[in-house]
Amino acid sequence: MPRMDASTTAVRFSARDPSDGGRPPSAVVFDLGGVLIDWDPRHLYRSMFSGDEAAMEAFLATVCTPEWNARQDAGRPWAEAVATLVEEFPAERERIVAFHERWPEMLGGAIEGTVAILGELRDRRVPVYVLSNWSAETFPVARARYPFLGWFDGLVISGEECLAKPDPRLFRVLLERHRLDPRSTVYVDDSAPNVTVAAELGMVALQFTGPAALRADLARLGLVGEPGAAGAGPVAARVAAPRTRTREDPAG
Image (cartoon, rainbow, N blue to C red; front, side):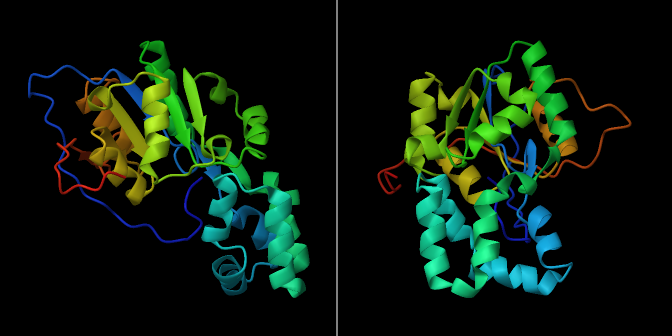
């Protein structure tokens, strides 16, 4: 899932040169939240806080924090997570319980521009995969809501593996299970730390900033058609060129 904080940190990488003579990548891996699906706890909590943005942000920063939610993405059961947090913040019981019981209300619509890109890749017979931080308990809700989740050749969901990004081991699960060569695999994610790890593992890593930028970068890589005049915009996503691991690099 995407980060719960409201800020965005830009990461710049040198773009891969399409004229370098190399073949286009042979597969594309997508993150889900913030890339294909508009997931945000604020969709729920704005109503629970009656529009008090400051109070809502304080709650999400100090009670139902990104770190707390990330443990469910890594496999912690929701019942345990809620019970532990209610014990720590008994006055916030209703809002804490809502994070799980009303979790579907945090789902917005599909990010249609990215879904269109996914559809074009599928039409071009480019293998497509998912690598997403998502609780195993809540992912079935998303599967039922978004038909395009059935378009993928494979999905690796963090909660099912009890590992979460940016842990390199989760990336390796994807690569090994689906026999993907990292140097011919594009990885798309809105989180800078995840993009960095993908690049360190040798993948062609793109930080997602919007569908128009993603289309431009994938077109430059030879995977989709060039952006049309109406949909073209400044290319904000950048490619993290795969690099050779050295002895000084952490093993992950």
